[in-house]
Image 1: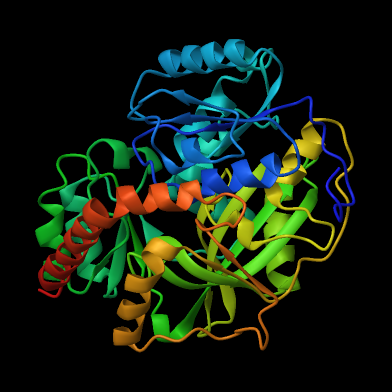
Image 2: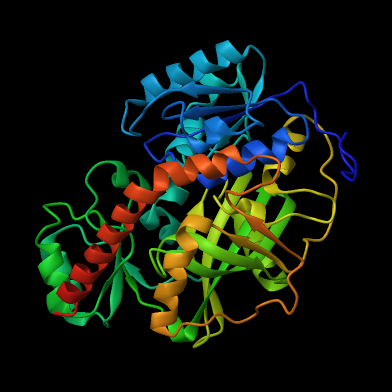
Length: 418
């Protein structure tokens, strides 16, 4: 056991990073490989090719090259996972990095159980949680605050909604999975006027597939995150809270910069909700504190490991991935308070996010007076190759992609402004 770590993982049980779709620059998978690999757990990963940052990690025992889109038939994906399991040759903890993987595992537990270890959960729950509409319905059922929302099923219903709605508002795809096929909107889209909404809606087809939500103004809101692991009884064995400082694309995308802030009220809200719905496993929640009414409103529920999970670690050396591995292998998860003042930075997206946030004049409260440490998503002294692999793959196409995102957001802003 490495010095300073007050627990002993079962090194006979490997971990497998499960990801579907083409997104090779995923720092969360690299973080999980390092988190368990540094403690001697054999780590494996499904990768798009042999030259991804995850495949380059010195803590990875083997990369299984398996290009997917995330839209394959479930039977094909299950068979592919079983094939990987046979090559590993022993029971393995599954670590999904996207909703497609989390939902597939939940809906095919019987077929996968002989080869893999994963939290048992109601088969339909992860799909419902990953859906914006499903999550909103669950919030209403259990009295959890969330933004006012509507899910129109036709253009006519959108017209009726627009006649009574307060603007601005935001539009999101109802289902997480449509980003792999034909999304109606690109991520979270702010719509300023009735005319802007109707103009966009004309391109959404017969079945819009969007959820329209109230807009929570940045100047009156704070972005919070909760990462946790819940056991088979929906009891939290690891619970962490923090503030999202910046994201990319700005205010609507992946976390680029965040820090740890203790928030017992928020942790209690999350724990009660997850107990009510009976979820088991790792969660990554996004909530927005609305200063106008003093309530935390649940925006997103990711039923899997979040990419920025390494922001959080307890005094006992526990993060959510370590907690899951310990629990699924029958070992005790040691208690411990979260390490305060930690920061997390995703190097390749935080600089453009910083520039965008400075232009908007947005500031985040609750910054720790003294940072106790900074966790970088890519750069690690004991594992340099993922960082340089990321740079090689990111610099040219990455800058082009960010420019395209910027132009898309500019065009969207002009269109939605009417």
